[in-house]
Length: 82
Length: 351
Ligand code: SF4
Image (cartoon, rainbow over all chains, first blue to last red; front, side, top):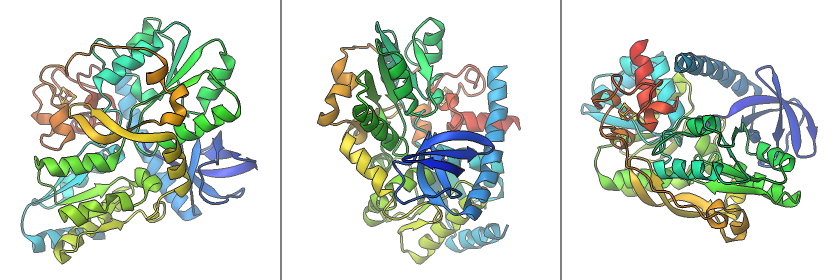
């Protein structure tokens, strides 16, 4: 539940941003972000809020982990549904 | 894996049993997924603590959430993770099947849209989670106030990580030689709130990322502290965690919530371990606005969640594990959440 996913900022409108999360577009709030962010920056997103700016290398690294993690949980969801 | 060699050497050097506890559901899953346990030396044991906010939500709070959803003119909104947690008689999922108005949200912000679309309804957000999620609810409430959305209320069952660790240590029920601390909770609160652990209990800590390499590195940092006899709060997950945390998020949290006693599933009421809306937000606090009383039943017979959450027992030691309690038919909360210890053990066993 406490997982934050790295996302890339596509556009910013005031305190809202559109981000790319593993290929999906999402609107997130920037209101909790402690520092300024620009288009192209990576941020950690948790439940619709950007919480922290991170560099690209870190973002790619944790995205890889995140994908594995998501796959792992999906397997579980599969036999939850059966 | 270079860290494996270092861990072997360090553990050999320490030469006695070492218990390291992780207190984050994401770590629990990652440890199982990567098979870390199988490569650790015999004298190093990893224990899972109360790291999953879904698992520690009390039966009474689930019952209350269901009662809210059944009020006339109400819509209960919740994170999807909470849907299958068993209450006294049913889960939110079962309540929804019986007609209760419950909507799953991905972000608390979605509650604003739901409230705007349903002006004649009272939208009650079941706000659960650790310090990672509380600021999001706070920001959503501020937004509701600014936009004049009056029909949004919050049922706060937030739990705080550091007080739970203090109580775990004070109880002395299980020996802990080091803590792997949660990465994302700490992104919000920073490292300071944990400083009492090395200072008062002389126990090493490391805030750790959730990849397998991160965790191994975190373990070496803890072992190093043991060897040097210099317990402190290290940050392995430097790329996301600052010692001071996320000041903005903390400010939102402090302006909206106050610390209160809180009922942890299987553990009981822990003093000053949860968050409720403060006086300023009384008009949005479901517990103050709606008059609801529930009569909750005790934890199902035989379920050992309480002992498992405190690291005293492991899931296979529960007589119900895998026989009567499975992810399909969970008896206790630790089997429901994908980040619960019982569920992680169950899946690991099947792999
Ligand atoms: S296996 Fe099921 S019954 Fe046993 S402790 Fe875990 S959740 Fe509770």
